[in-house]
Length: 310
Image 1 (cartoon, rainbow, N blue to C red):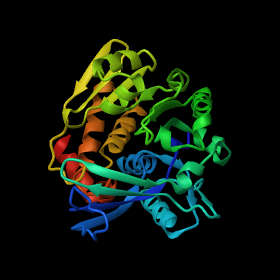
Image 2: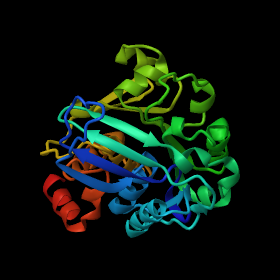
Image 3: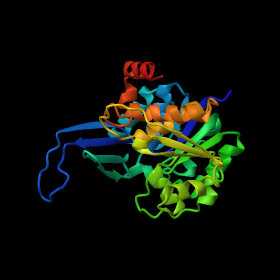
Image 4: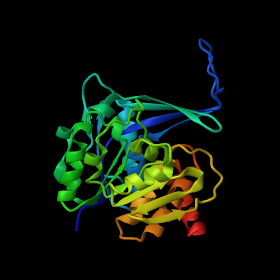
């Protein structure tokens, strides 16, 4: 039996979330936030943390700086029962990345200092560790600037070792989306974009056209539709899942939490409807607390939520 259910290689950093700032940020003014949250950030780490909270065995590989922010992020993953034995703490001038999120009522600004996020490379990876798993997942494709030239090779290697694979691109900060997607996606079993990302990858503003195009490239396409739930395309098959209704506090990390919920069931061989329902459940649950992992850090809160919704 493999050591892990899911392994992940990617970024590890914190999110600093500021609430209650004015929507128009005037220059040279000291603007006051109403409250803040310093929490585990980065899509890769949020997926890893929340997968482990749901009961999956998760191995995580990353690169952080030799600084206090990196140590806090590492401890949060460890507290979440994620194996971090292959996280590299690198000395040098580059510090751990940090994302600052300015949270508004209906939208948010996302400001990221890359730091060590972009310095993770193929040479940092322990391939034997990552392949000792049932499934390999990669998030934040466009932030993995050091690793990105060999992402296709990495996915191919994992499949050659018998793992299934998944990819969530997340946003492209340059908004270019200029990647050889045929080369990348040919070794992806589950592609997990949101609606905007699916359209960007396909080069169209029409979601249905994007779904038709992308479902020809991957065995399973899963599109996160926010308040409309989620849908999956497997060949010509289409399955839609309604969202879970909750009182949302904060949607930061909801898409990454969906990935965790979906993959938690996928690696166990659950049918597609159950995988989608699990993704919607995890995504909704994450919004009940600030940040992407805080809800999952409360074991009793998670237990009570699952018992009343399943």
